[in-house]
Length: 202
Image 1: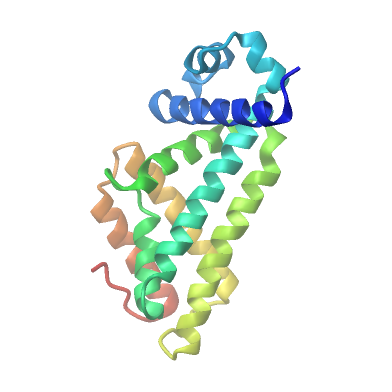
Image 2 (image 1 turned 135 degrees about the horizontal axis):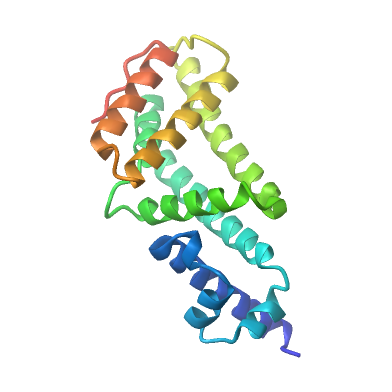
C-alpha cells in the first residue's frame, strides 16, 4: 500500500488530470478510462485511490472552487473603493479568453453538469455558492456603508440575483452564444438597477 505522502501526491495528480480532461473534452471525455490514460495509470489504479469516480469529481470540484474564489477575492480586494471592487468582481465573473478564470469557469460548468446527476459533491457545490454569495453581499454592504448604493431589495437578494445572472451569462459566453463584452454590459446594467447606482464597465 502506498504511503500517505505518496497517496496525497497521486490523488493530486488525478485531480489535475481530471481537470484538464473536463476543460478540454467535457464530461464525456473524463470517464474512468480517459482519466487513467491521462494520468498514465490503469483504471484499476484510479479505482484504488477513488473507488467511486464521484469522489474524484467531488475533490476536483472542491479544488477548482477554492482556487477560483480565493483568486477572485484577492483580485477584488486589491481594488480601492466599493465601486471599483464591485466592477472588478463583475468583470471576473464573465469568462474571457486569456484570463485564468476562463478555464476555471469551463471546469466548474462541466462539474456543475455532472452534479445534477450525482449528488456526491453537493456539499462542495453548496460551499462554493455560499462563498460567492458572501462576496457579493460584502461588496453591496460596503457600497451601502459608503453612501453609494440604495439597493432595491435586501442585500441577500441582490447578491443571489447577481450570482444567478452571472451563471447564466457565463454559460452563454462559454457556449459562444454571447460575446464577453456584451455579457459584462448586461450584468453591469443589472447591478446598476439593483443597487440604484451606475456601475460602469471600465
